[in-house]
Amino acid sequence: MTTRAQALIPVTIAAVIIGVIGLLTLPSDSKLESVEFPRGTILIDDAALEVQIADSEPRRVRGLMFQDQLPFDQGMIFVFNEPGLHSLWMLNMQFPLDMIWFDSDGNVVHIEKNVPPCKTALEIAACQSIVPDDVAKYVLEVTAGFIDMNNVTVDSKLTIISI
Image (cartoon, rainbow, N blue to C red):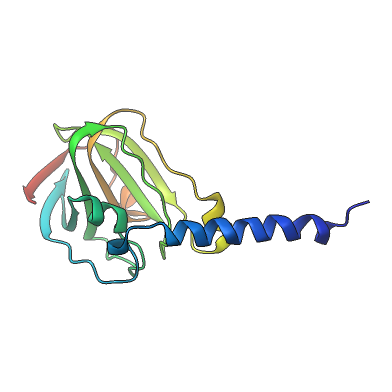
């Protein structure tokens, strides 16, 4: 009969290997080196946010990895060239996030609240991509709790001031 420890050892080893391979296959721009993000301002309904702009593939891959907690008046907006089913994940995040997907007109198409980070090898091995319900052009990441604090709903609207 297999003991619990005998069963967990291969699973743990596989998780560590998958995590290491995942980290090694990230583009060099997204590793620990500093990535500079342009900044802009947006409104979600009446809530103003200063945002870091992830508008290129290296910036989108890096995202908020390794950054500390964000104040509730800051976030990161992912800007895609074309609307699509743009998925995100929480690899190497340090804190939970709320995520909001918007179409080209600034309408909310999907909301995810309090998405936990994937930091440890086991979490990284099981880290899943979050896929929206509908096509989006923009995705906003903010500190978990922002959606509830600002009453963001599917009827909310994104207004771009400068990005």
